[in-house]
Image (cartoon, rainbow, N blue to C red; front, top):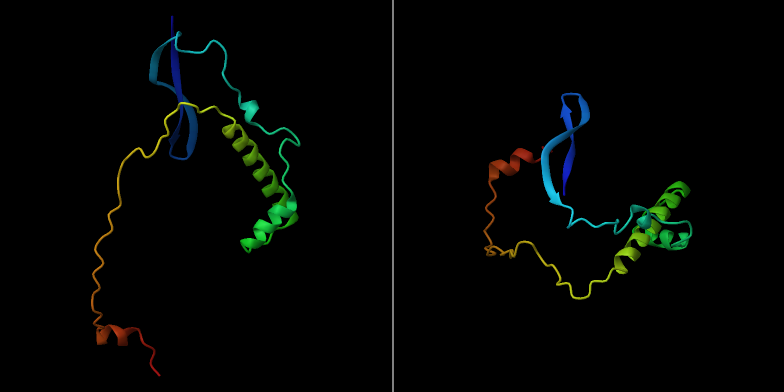
Length: 135
């Protein structure tokens, strides 16, 4: 048995945008490689009420260190976002990675610094006087 996978992508035309289903990347996949039941759910990643609590004082302290002032509305929004991030990080930390080789860089490129060669500055009198104010 094989399963057909369909690709849906947004297509834009001048001023209109619509989603069109395209058979562009239709592939046949053996049902043997697909799990019989879902292995995870998006709902698992969503934060439940009071699952992770962040003290608003900590958010205000971090904002003060960055010299950022926050309104009460911004404080509430940032607190919720930080709690959502911490909840997601908790799920990432709970994953079993025993025996999995770490992934480093896709490309093993090294940035080579260019040689530092100082040049003598020779100011052009015409250039300097062009931008100077007349007194």
